Amino acid sequence: MTYKRYIIANKTINLPLSSMMAIFILVVLVGCRDTKPKLIPCMERALFRDPAESTYVLPFPVGKSYRLIQGYCYPYGGHRNQLAYDFGMPIGDDVVAARAGVVRKVRDDVADDGSESDAGRHNHILIQHEDGTVAFYGHLKQGGITVKIGDRVAAGQRIAASGNSGNTKGEPHLHFGVYQAWPAVEGFDVGVNFRNARGPLTDSGGLQAGNVFEALPY
View 1 (cartoon, rainbow, N blue to C red):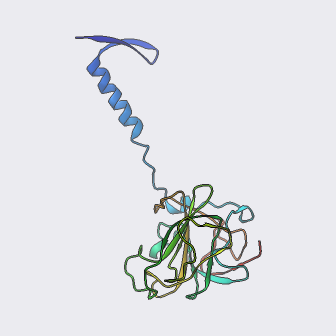
View 2: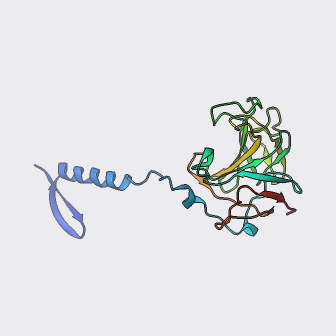
View 3: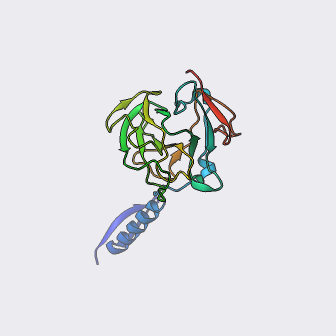
């Protein structure tokens, strides 16, 4: 049997090639087993900066006010594991970009009747920002989207009309959330607040559900 000389942990040992191969495979497997991203519990992901330092503005025009009907990590409903906001908005009201970026995805083929049982089937826009994060704007009005894939948009620019597409439980609203990267994956979202929001915040700095928020000039 052929032996090779190896240096391991500052000691010289002689082992068969087959044994060394087995050790190598074991080391690779152990080293790789924890490389898959782990899903962090929702409330542990809900980390916020000082609103004055936020790179985001509210996703509706300056001077407008809407009630936040559902906030982050809600104990029931569709936000159990989501860092997302639902703003109650009448059908047809303006939706604006919360941050500058490039449009990566548009869907505009779902009726505005709020009856869709599939939670993922609704009109929406995804916009990627310069740091790689992606904002999601959902439940938009069919035919009301004013941007297309590849468009560059500025913060505050009108991008769509609010709607009632998808599974809205009969309450028209704008669903807004931010993800770590494109493509957007549930559970890998980002906690954001807004530098122009007037309204109460949670202890951690997010918007407090059940309250009305006004978009201030910025």
